[in-house]
Image (cartoon, rainbow, N blue to C red):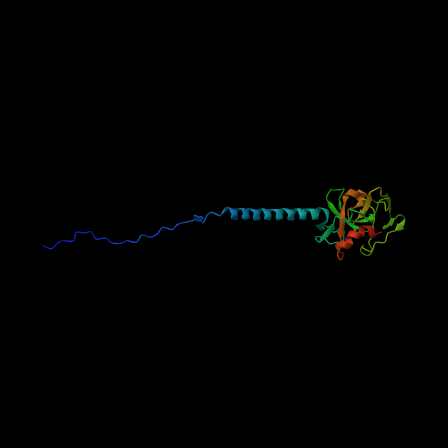
Length: 215
């Protein structure tokens, strides 16, 4: 009788090795703390730059240069309605406004803002007679006016004498027939003169020196 082989049949099965992680992987939705700190610093820097830019803009527009729009025709032919010009707010920090300067004032009538020309300064007299303007007794040469322009008072009396007091300025628009100016509300005080307008063809540097050069 043949002897049966009763030994069990063994087979080799390979078992895949489990990966060994020295550092656990970072889930995709999470960022390492170092990257988060870097991102926060970048965002803070952008916010700081934005705040500094706004501060520079408001500082420059408040104390140095500001864009203004002329509304109305009271300064024709020098300035045109709806045109934009630069206002030099620094011009009168070290110099007083002078005759001939085109300035932005706080209107004593409606407390808004107006563009006018300085005709007389503190201590000077203004005399209106037969459509002409006299400063300290001498007729004022006004080449900026349209030809044949006459300047009359705001009343039926065609002659009027006005004296500018301390820190007062007599201002008028170049379009005399329609301008509401010192002929109506009187001389304006120094705090109401806000700055010097940069006229077409003038540089900001030139405009900043006009206050001391014009007489």
